[in-house]
Each structure stands twice: as C-alpha cells, then as structure tokens.
Image (cartoon, rainbow over all chains, first blue to last red; front, top):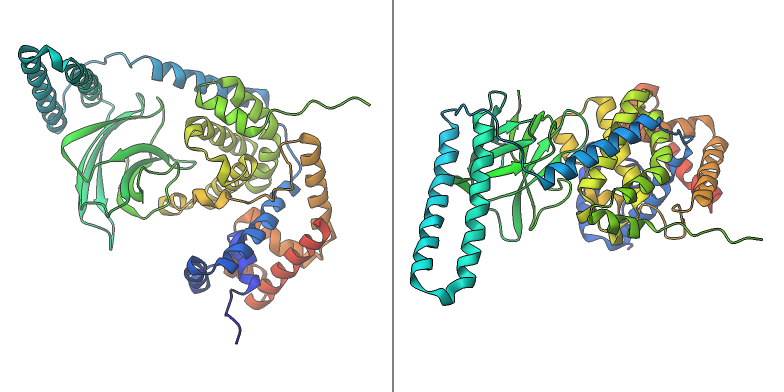
Length: 257
Length: 185
C-alpha cells in the first residue's frame, strides 16, 4: 500500500493560492509531516512564481523612485535626530503611561545616585544605569509628545475569539509616526514572543516591535515612520524574537479611527 | 568579444543597505522595479495604485533589510511574492486578518537555483520564455491559471465565475502547470 501523498493538482493550486476550504486545511495538516510533499510544493512554487514574469515589464515613472528615495532619506534623518517637542496638552489616560515611565525613571535616578555615593569601583554598573536612565528619559519625552498632541488617536486592542485573554491600549500619532503601547496579555508560550504591528490602509503590516505580555505598568514607546497612517494595530504571537512579517495568530486587534 | 561586467549580487546590496547605503536600494530598485511593476499593473490595472504598491514594497525592503535572510530565498522571489500578495489584497479589498496572513516563508525557494534572474539579460529571456509558454497553452487552461495568479481567485471562485465544474478547473490548472514545466525545461 502506498503512502497517501497529497494530490499533485492540489499542490499546484495551493502554490497558486487557489486552493480553498477544507481541501486547503487538509493539505496544510498533511504538509506539516510529509517531507516528500514539502519537496513537491517547492517544485510547484518554482513553477508558479514564474507566471508573474509573463507580464511585460513596465518602467515606473522617475517620480516614483524620487519619492521613494526622499522617504528613505527622511527616515534616516528621523532616526538620527529626535522629533522636536510639540505643544503639551496631556490627555487623562496618557497620565497612566507617564506614571509608569515616571516611576521607572525616578527609580533609576535614585539608584544611580546611591551607586555614585557608594563605590567608585562600580563605575561600569553606574555607566550602564546612566545609559538606561538616559534612554528612559528620552522615552518619557517622546511619550509626552504623543500624549500631548491633539491629533493623537486612542486605539483599544481587544482579544480575539479562541485567543488568550488580554487587552491593550495604543495612543498613536501618525504625523510623528510614534505611539505609546500599554497592555496585558496571558503569558506567551515558551519560545514565543508577542509582536505589535501597524496595519496600514494599503500594503503589508509594519512591525512596531516586540511587546511584553505584561506591559500594564511600563508602557513602551513605538517609533515608526513619520506620516505612516494606521488602519489598525494588532498583536500576533510569533517565534521568539519576532518576524519581519506576521506569521502567527492575531491575539489582540484594534481598528484605528 | 568583450566580457560583460558582472552585476553586484543582491546579497551584497542587501548587506550594504543594512549599513544605511541608499545607493544599494537604488540599484536594487533599478534592477527589479520594471519586472515588479509589470506584474502589479497586470493585477491592479491602475498605474497609480501599482506605483504605490511598488514604492511600499521597496520601502519595506529598506526598513527590513536587517531581517532579510538571503539563505531562505532570492530577493526577486520575495519581491514577486510580496508584491502579488499586496496587489491582490488591494484588488480584492481583503480584510486585516487576510493581510496579516501574508507568510514571509512563501518566498523561500520560489525560484530554482539555476535561474539567475539577477542578470538582466537572463531575466528578460526567462520572461519571454514564460510569456511564450503561457501563449502556447489552450485558452481554457491559460484562463484558469491567469484567474488564479493575476486575479487572486480561488478554485471555487473560478468555478463560479466560469460556470465550469470544480473538478474540471483543478484538471485544467494541473495540466497547464505540467505543460509549463515541460515547455520551460
């Protein structure tokens, strides 16, 4: 009796993205454990990827490249220099973020002071704490900009059906490309990380970095590209360290606007 | 006979991008933007939308250069897979969940190692061969493949749209892909 490998027709359809319904689910289950069919799928993908080349090439207008390179340069400059401070107008819920960071910053400042008093031999530890303090101070300043800006949007991210319990809040300013995330989710399984994504109105999600399961009292500042508008934010469960594009299930989702 | 200068490998350009080298992105854009835009235009049939997607893809490449693993697949394969997914998402107004399902692993091994499409002449030849191969297929087979690839339709949607039984659609796609494999061999 031969091994019931996947139907070759289904592999071609799957590679084309055309297989659907129960057949797709069954094939995906089979592929997890069948190395032969995995190899057949690679071959099917090699064939299907070539289909796109059949479309005649079209040279883009020069403006497209110019605009792309302008954005790239703007991002480089933005990464090199912090966004200037905006007019302060604190929102009440933003105080929670400020409180978490304020506590952390004050604790670090105190620890730094105590260490300085105690022992000069602990210079390296002191320098590390000072560096951490500077980072947190910068984060606090960035958070103040986002919470104080009148055009910042509040988004609540809610748990998904059959997903782990949790909820999070995001305060995001598209103009600055900056946000503040706070939330709590059930601990991630071993070897997994929670990753935050900005979902734009078009195009693929943009990673906003890893987030801790318990980010309730220590909000995290998220820096993206200035001008990057969000249709939604989502948290997915990814392999440890995160991925360039989402691969795991969505755990929390919240629509913006 | 003069020797043609060898193009800088994609892997070296990606490495340069990781250090913030804009010229490396510019070279990759010049190398692959026309190939990519051709496919995007075919799917979206809207020059402005296609150019927006094109720009997004290269911007993502710039932002994620540090994470791109050349060992997992070729750059043009990644560009074509991501470009197609995004264009179809836009065309069909897919929801967030479906956009999020874009699997990064899809690009792995999507072009066979013998296909050196970093070289412009070889890439152009491969494209001509593929267009000719598709052209040699019976109309009904070509239509099934094109509806799946360029319209992003599932087999059920193709069957519904064409009024042809699902089993027949499956057979047509399979036969078409077998023929393409023989023609391109």
